[in-house]
Length: 337
Image 1: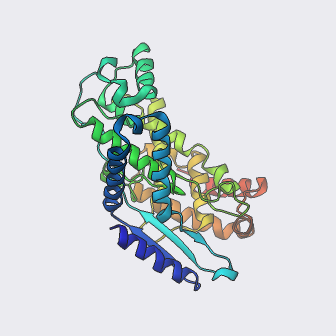
Image 2: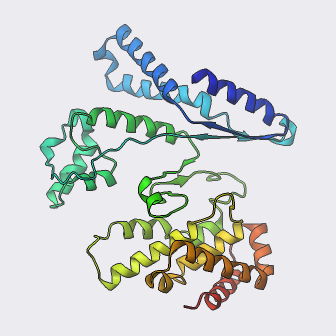
Image 3: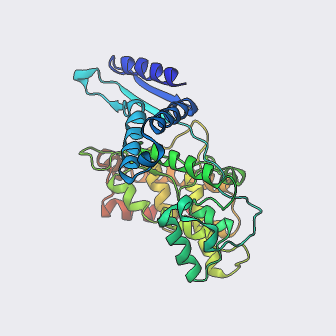
């Protein structure tokens, strides 16, 4: 696995230096993990466990592991014309371990979380929840990515740390869950735990960090997270409104396989969802597929009606007050319940 990934990356570099745009998909990192685990065991045998487990040694080992993976991951990039003009992208596929059992209704106490295994930071969070009277259940722990106490807690915790180190080296990560897929979301992506770092801090125009995207998607993660925390038996009007807004966001994020939306289409859809223009329809039980069809029709009409503003949006990746007002008014007229 290690040799195959290195060979693929090397061949991809050659292609990118000759003007090609290449995507490398690494679907198995177990080989890399085994190599690193073997390296750690060799160091432990050589230096001794006591010395290797000191704070300085653990920090150094963490840095070495990051360097080990960076040799593969950080070969990606977009070359200028002087160096070939191509690009190399890399997609890593990882299985995140199940931290808790869905049917586990046990309430845990602080004594169930030894600091030697969970660390002081996690134990501190558990103590804070216990002091505030929050039941420490598997469901609560799952939201915090804390493994439930048990025989396999140490193995799960180590694997989560391993994945966190890998994702910290990347330019972002997408978290796909079976639960959202079963609910009909395509892709079944958890937007509350997914993120991108592409373009952040760079002096270029990048879609994810563009002014327009930040403006229309500012509340997306918050609204989805807030709706996910609503108890299933809460039938209040406020809860219904929050669920409708979450479904509106999800409808905008839904897209058919092989048909990615253009940047203006994304902005118009997010503007409609964030502005509450789909809430009434979602509260009436409109399905995600039907909402997607309604939205696509409205967006197409607005693109034709506001062609000048759309062209400005495509060119600058920013949403001027004039363009935002024009888009909002046109969308409101097209999406009347």
